[in-house]
Image (cartoon, rainbow, N blue to C red; front, side):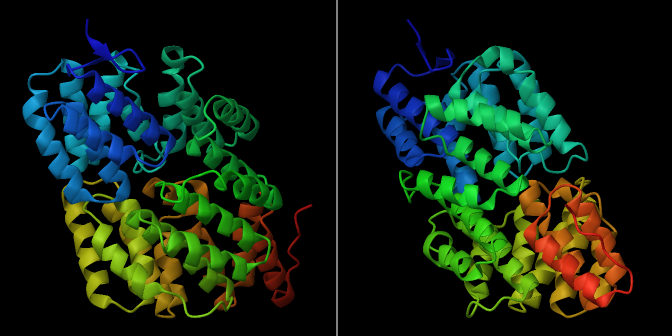
Length: 440
């Protein structure tokens, strides 16, 4: 009798112990719980020929931003997977493409694969992530369709409920997202994906104090070593910043983000938070941009555009022209290969960041405005990529273009009455002869 995983898929191992550790690693990875890497390593120790255990280690390394470790793990999977099932061979092939920097090809392979094997949850998770579908102009709508059509295969599965909930929140279906996330947490209280969704819902509905209360309580029982602790702490810091408490936000950075073992998220989330301090003009002490620039040099990899645009924030802030130039040349090289957004979207954003730090606000605006309406294609959630819209607002204000700032702010306020946007509306209104209506 063959051994199967929790989703009923056969596993090419004769070791029940290896299979048990693999399932533990899968659930920990799907929930962003602590110890997924240890579980996959234990599965490998129990059966070194278990290809999916090596692939699990590759997936964890990809999430951590360790491209070299991901490639090494995939290479170790290649030999034994030749003797495994077709499902497992296709699983490894798709991850090999992603680990090798061919994200578009890898995602295409996953979409084809899950038509036949919809319950291959780790691949669905990889493809349905916020970052994973970066590059598409219809990213949010495509992700909803991709995950929704798999619903019959999963039923009331705790992980799938949270995965579907995330797609809904990014298209404004907040009540459905919260309901599914709460259902997921009722089944699996340690699911950081679900708590993350609720944090997003609070952010988008401007329930900042509610978001602080929820996350503060939930993080009490979440292992600080878990890979998503850093990102949830970033959400907590954003809530504090929206509430006008930058010192608390910075304290969260120093305690929970800067110390994270997840170097990739520490760089991305740290840069996104510190950049907001700069935009708001708040003084919370020396900002550790040098450390973030060092992390950026470690974790950026070809094809990971979302990482590149955040690395640019760090490089520009420390005046590392060499690193910025190398980043720009790398994006040009990707563009030459036909990458959908490296040259058309990411490159203008990186150049805009460099111009902003140099004090060339008009130049920065020219770059940012050339991709206005396309910024979401770099990946990440709305709460992440809107950072560049916020930079555009500040550029307008510093140039004295108060009417232009007001128009952009009205567009943003139509989605939600963000306290930071309302503060900028006040600045534009006080300096502009044209009144700027406040949102109710």
